Amino acid sequence: MSKYRAAIIGTGGISRAHAEALKASADRVEIVACVDIDRERAQKFAEQHGIPQSFTDAKEMLDRVKPDLVHICTPPSLHAELSILAVRSGAWVLCEKPLCGSLAELDAIQQAEEETGKYVSSVFQHRFGPGAAHLRQLIREQAMGRLLVGLCNTTWYRDAAYYAVPWRGKWATELGGPTMGHGIHQIDLFLWLCGDWQEVRAMAGTLYHDIEVEDVSMAVVRFENGAMGSITNSVLSPREESYLRFDFEKATVELSHLYGYGPNNWRYTKAPDADPQEFARWSAVPEQRLGGHTAQIAALLDSMDKGERPLVSGAEARRTIEFITALYKAAITGAPVRRGEITPDDPFYHSMNGGFGDMRKMTAKAQ
Ligand SMILES: NC(=O)c1ccc[n+]([C@@H]2O[C@H](COP(=O)([O-])OP(=O)(O)OC[C@H]3O[C@@H](n4cnc5c(N)ncnc54)[C@H](O)[C@@H]3O)[C@@H](O)[C@H]2O)c1
Image (tube, rainbow, N blue to C red):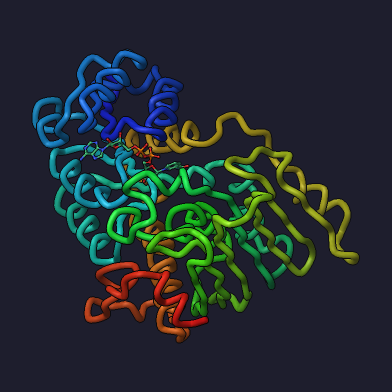
């Protein structure tokens, strides 16, 4: 079978993880082109990774190279536009998070998918560890009883130098603060495991950094299955941690790590009356062969082989983007938001902050 031909658009920080992950599947895919508006950066990246062609314009590359798969690694505000351009050129897309900046953009991506028969998938590498798949299977079986309580904390630290990069810290280009840019990984995994959410209440603020977007947000959420959860996203936390916790009737399951997890990052704790043999099965977290982007890209290539919609796309991508939109709406308006209420006549359908602007001013007003 011939190999898929992949191209990478945006050759900055994260693109290396994509190139390495593609090279790990070198028997199935080859990188045929890369693009960056910074010519030297694109050329250097091509040399480093043995990529035969580099370009400075994405459309020119798509027209000339016609890749089967396009990886989008540019700043967030270009993701939707480039994803649509790429599927219309005949490629499947793996786009870095966040996939887009509004539900309106998400609908435009889905429209392009329907018209072309190609799929746009969002990078959420945390879903692809075997520990997450194992827990999801246990939840499907209701093995540990009902889920009652969940915690989802992304407490990270970012300094002023981090926000000196021009596209960061602004609604127009970063599309949000730690909720949209950092916590989104854990939120996606949390929602995938907890199931559909029903209602969210939230607060957000800009407490420290001189940025337009929030530097902290906190939300409480009620799920369709009756469980309740809390979600914290911060870039103000010197002891950094990514932490998920699920309290079921018969066990607590925790995941604690920073930017990537393995089997040892999971902890299962038995409820006093749970069966010890059953507990041994639940807590046997499988070994991890592939991690991070490598695991997600291998799964995407499987989907391409089968011609099937990849895991983190369509409705699965919508759940997370809709939830984050609702979290911002709840924080900005002060009112609870229910799933499904943000429709095209709502300003929050068109942008994450509903056109309300600078979070610094909103924080000052609230104090
Ligand atoms: N999945 C993860 O764990 C993870 C980690 C870090 C970053 N990211 C995401 O990856 C994306 C990129 O982040 P980064 O840290 O690599 O940013 P970066 O600024 O280091 O790199 C972005 C690159 O895109 C290039 N670019 C800008 N406009 C372009 C255009 N029109 N065409 C082609 N290239 C263009 C820039 O010149 C730059 O080289 C962001 O969305 C970020 O949120 C994801």
